[in-house]
Image 1: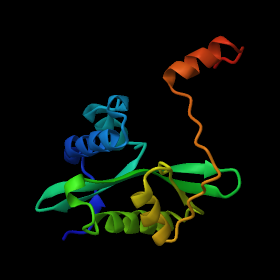
Image 2: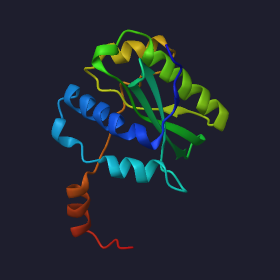
Image 3: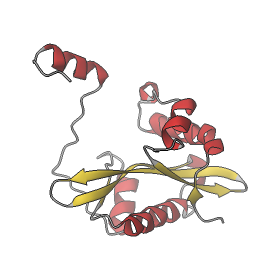
Length: 162
């Protein structure tokens, strides 16, 4: 089995397939708005917005981990793991561990103070996987989002402008 590697622009069609597979698993197939072109421009410009690692089985990308830097007012620079995805057909074959190993090594290389991510509260296999790796799943925190429509509605009711 190959080790994870940095993704290339040519991997983005398969990365998008994995993103869509995750959305189906998470019961939100219509929620994916990102396109191959957006992944390519955002990830492979002079100032990339993310770093992506992929892992191949038989020369096909079967897993990916997408990360980006954030800033914590308590810790300083942190790394955010947006998604760690392994294709359904390859789960349970150590690909997730290899990808997470790569993300943690990358975070250490960057000198971040924390690596953070979210997991759905009903995804017990993922929760168990992360806890077994030493991660603290903070069950008393809720994720808060404003989607595009909510941003527009919010701004209609306040005076903030840029």
